Image (cartoon, rainbow over all chains, first blue to last red; front, side):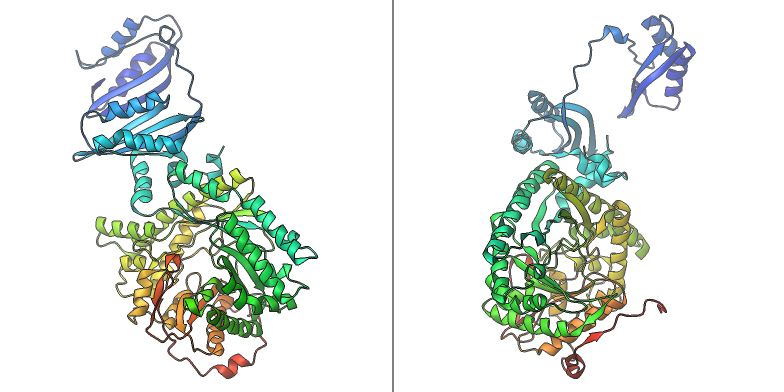
Length: 180
Length: 457
């Protein structure tokens, strides 16, 4: 993580590439002016995480960035992906503490996996947009009722709608391609 | 993930701008229900509709929950009943109509179309019988809707059929006089009738259609009106081409939502998906009016010069957006101007800004025709024939669909108000500017030949 400015990606990727590695996957975002990125890379030869950290840090100012390098083999294996349908959850209302805790708790209690999450702030109000996978067999009608009930104390308006309605109204490809 | 602004745009359309699916209409071929005995035929009709359509409403309700998108109407359109009536008696028409009515009720459908006859080049005895049975059929049933096609660009215009159906319209109104002639709201007289329209009262399953098919009518005009208003807020000096572009983009989204729902319904019912009908169909609710779109464009008094151009702009932009959105566009696909069903149009007619003559001009550049117009109950059948002939001529010459749905109100006078309630709305009885003088021309009957297809100026 580093304060956003031009040239950050060059500093990271050039250090990795110069060590003979290939970058496999990458995801980057900026939150409130802070640039953060997560990436995976494959190195031809054995390489210590500390050496990789040092190579990247050398392209930045002292103490400018926070970095963690870890071998994938040392990390816990990802849990199996939830088998289900993809929905968009939208929670809208005045911003206040506790919205995320309650919302994400509601999802976790039902084994609903969050695939992606974003927020939009507009004055004092906030909109959370979550891409979630609802396991097969879950009664979506009841889920919607329960979600509304869960968030009503916080004054939040929440809805869950199948992802395809958003894709259909915003993408250009054939509708048939959205249906399995 | 889809962008945040795209998600919020779709959500706003659904929650605040009345984005919905106006109708999911199942078309069913009933030609194989014909039996020697009329009671057996009626039973076969009921069984087939129950078997094919029994889950339509439940599937639509499920999709409503999953997508958060309301499906306003679930309807049925059957193959022309005139075919089932060949070689039968007039009382058999009522038996079949009652079977359709009962079958529709049993599967939770409010309107069923297809009590129809295609007589643009001539009438069989059964087609004549069907038209003559309409007063009894439409006054004895709740859900049955009828249509008669009296002209095509290829065949010309059958004036004999027009004269017959004009008399029937007056008789239907009289037979339903206890409800201000409401029965006449359930029959549409067409030129160039489409075989796949999902909208009532004119929907039927055409001869070129599959055994069973799902056709969809897209959302109403509220979404488009709000889009134009939002554009004006962002850019008060927006030009007409800016408005056309906004309408086109909105139509794209609306059409895609309609096709998604239609294909899902078809898949879950294991039937063929047919078409998305792009028509903007209003309801009497404020915020769901085609007239409001013209007002948003800047036509403050509907009927003023410029109104026809506004209709043309809207109709064309909707088609362009819809045609890019889907390769399965069909039906009527334009902007409807049903006076009683649109509070803004109805108000303009009531205050005299919008006349039948101006409405007729507007129908030359949109779908469909003179729709849901109340007239005095003492009008002559020749006047109805003349109105139908004028409207059919516009359709036949311009190679487009046109239609007439006028309601003579028994005992009603110009200026009287009538309220049918629900989706059929309310309105004021009006009269044409020159209600007499063409009787000799109309009574000659016969056919107006098919028009030349070249020398197009």
